[in-house]
Image 1 (cartoon, one colour):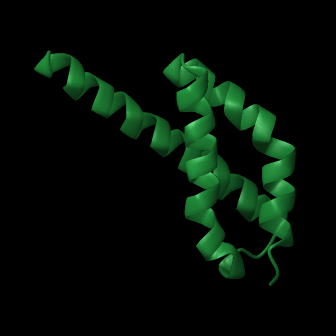
Image 2 (image 1 turned 180 degrees about the vertical axis):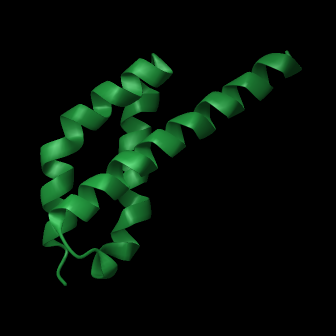
Length: 81
């Protein structure tokens, strides 16, 4: 399969994913970084993504997991200070 399902899902969901990350992280730069990192992580898997719905589900799950990772790192950094 081509990269079309992933590109289509990301272009349509980019704003939604950014809003979601802003709610989690409360920082615009971190939110933008998470959305970009999600795309970078999914891009190598583009050949195995069957359709737009699967791409959307993977994108949202990846963004959510990356937000959790950022929050965990922040928590550890705060305890070190």
